[in-house]
Image 1: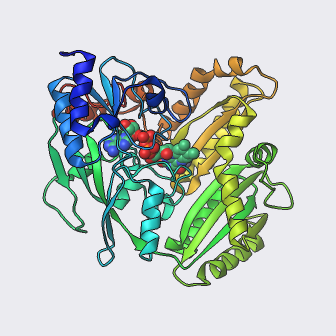
Image 2: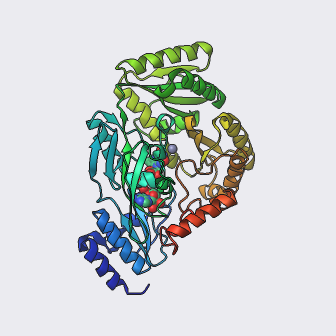
Image 3: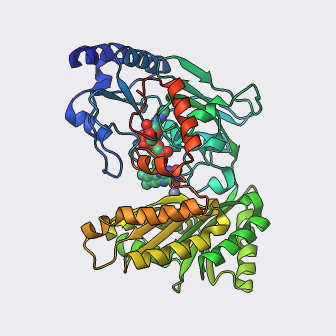
Length: 471
Ligand code: FAD
Ligand code: ZN
């Protein structure tokens, strides 16, 4: 650092206004600890710019004074990417004051929005013009567009609409030296060289700051049907998925798997949750169909479930009869992380494998884990339609939580060994951040890592963008 703290804070205050440079411990605290409260760092200050020009000025100042930058949106990330490490010269740049929708162009199904707007704001803005913005996450009321781009968020509608990468037409990015890279196109087609926007999608704040995005809009479905089914096994769920994909096509928007333990713990810990089906089943699928026809989704769900019950593909099924019942199914699904927390110690993985291998993966890995830690309770759920499982493990009922957590590295090693063998991913959804940095280093192809480092070197030669994250 070339100057003292007061000089730097005064300089930043001159750029964004003194009220928007937070320096007091109490004011900074919410920005310095991650959502799960596993990572806390220190920062010189938290800067809250209002415009792209202000972000650019702050970045120029940071470059001049060799300050490191931690971009932050809603701070809902699950891998510690949005909080500083505490290296002594980091500033957090929070984008939440940049929350305006710049334009909506219904004819070209495009919306341009500032990076700090929440995902919910964008969903609502789209709905107001009779369109859908399909990305959907339990954290959508707080997670921002910039954060969902920087983490290439997935969620529960990725099966039909893809991840954030599939929903972005263009981005505006402030580079580490303060230059503004304007890639904010609404064009559907543009083959004029490298796809630069894609570099920033999933880059977790390590290459630049996303300040705005051009997003794709879709027709707003006129009906939805939410279905809860009991199935005998993950293989039965996979068979059901194949049948539903073939018969419903793009109408199949959600396909989530969960085990009986998930239902039991949700009922035990979450007051509003009821058992969705009369009898208990080993596994469950929660699926949703959407249609542009007013009664279309329900009719399709009825037809599919009658077929599945008849063939024995599902053992029981209920189609939500009201919005309230559909909401209760979603509350169960989205409450699973909370139910896990309330039950006690758990060890989590966010993995993907080829969809066809999911039953074998679950079977093989849970068997080996039960040998490694007798009594371990697999709580494996998630976006089966995307091949993405939250492969979570609840501590044995009678084991001291510290003793269980001490086994974490053995458990991770076992799970990741099988993931790599099956050509899967150790982080399907939540990214790398600080949490999985060392695991990335040993599981990613060395040449791929080398190319990533070279790209980082070109855009951020001093390594000031989100240091200690990803690479
Ligand atoms: P932050 O947490 O603030 O930041 C995340 C990363 O992006 C950090 O590395 C940060 O430096 C970087 N970043 C943030 N803003 C910018 C920017 N403008 N420019 C450059 N870099 C930036 N994720 C899923 O994918 N699918 C899910 O289903 C899902 N469900 C969740 C449910 C809950 C209850 C919670 C708490 C989280 C969930 N997440 C999920 C994780 C998280 O919500 C997403 O990763 C989300 O995209 C993060 O957005 P954010 O604005 O909070 O980003
Ligand atoms: Zn998820």
